[in-house]
Length: 109
Image 1 (cartoon, rainbow, N blue to C red):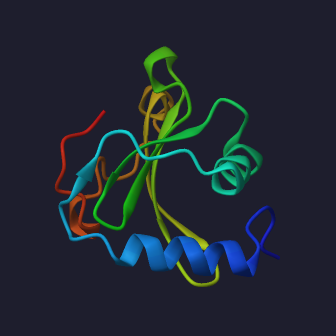
Image 2 (cartoon, rainbow, N blue to C red):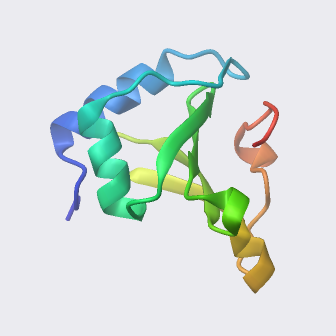
């Protein structure tokens, strides 16, 4: 079950992510209607792709007002959630933030 992530969308997003050099920061990823709709469907209506660091994504779900901030990586058959940070830390649900062991070397939100 891929949920909102179709195989074609995952394949395209993985290829795009894999073309980025490790540590390459994009603070303002361009809008992508299909990707953005899948992010909102998978993680919630307040969530959006806030930045990328190489092939990794930072998804902001209103972290400034205590929502979670997710670090993920597109794969060929799923979205790999690497860490949950932001407002999730207040409830003790943080996981290695930011995920430096997974390659996040860019500034955080």
